[in-house]
Image 1 (cartoon, rainbow, N blue to C red):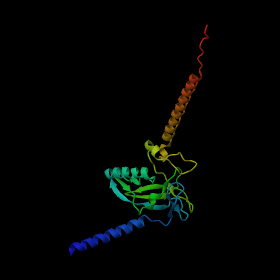
Image 2 (image 1 turned 135 degrees about the vertical axis):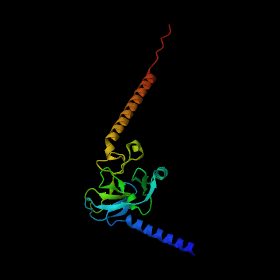
Image 3 (image 1 turned 180 degrees about the horizontal axis):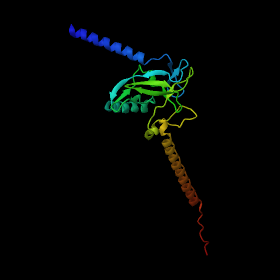
Length: 215
């Protein structure tokens, strides 16, 4: 009997915790809709003034080793299915937060090169705050802050005039432009070299060999 009571108590505590997480991951300011950027997105259902704490980004706190394992697994799945990739946030030097859980609708907020929100870390919790006034029906977005070293793995589809073409932290845009310019220069030189090689080949093909007339 004591064992059964213990099981029931644990189930109730788990149920209570799940309800709490669902409530923490909910918001009266926004809802899920199909996105023009990618897949599904989060849209404002009412006017959101600048500085508003819009929604909490909830999930499971994990150590760095588990974070690396899950991150690699999520990336492989994304590469295979085309779905969004990794939902893991760094919260400290020892721990990350994995937001890949169904009660975390904030995980559906897309990246933008001109975002209207930002992620704020408070202790071991992450919140999405408005950095400007947001109109009803506007899609929420924030800077994912990906590293420039893996920029080619993350093309950006935000469509903003400021878009740099890749999901890269804004403070690394200067480095991204340097790398893109270097790629463009390399491709231009490669095309020029290929064109010159083709010209020489065509010239050789067009050369006529004139034999001397017989005496």
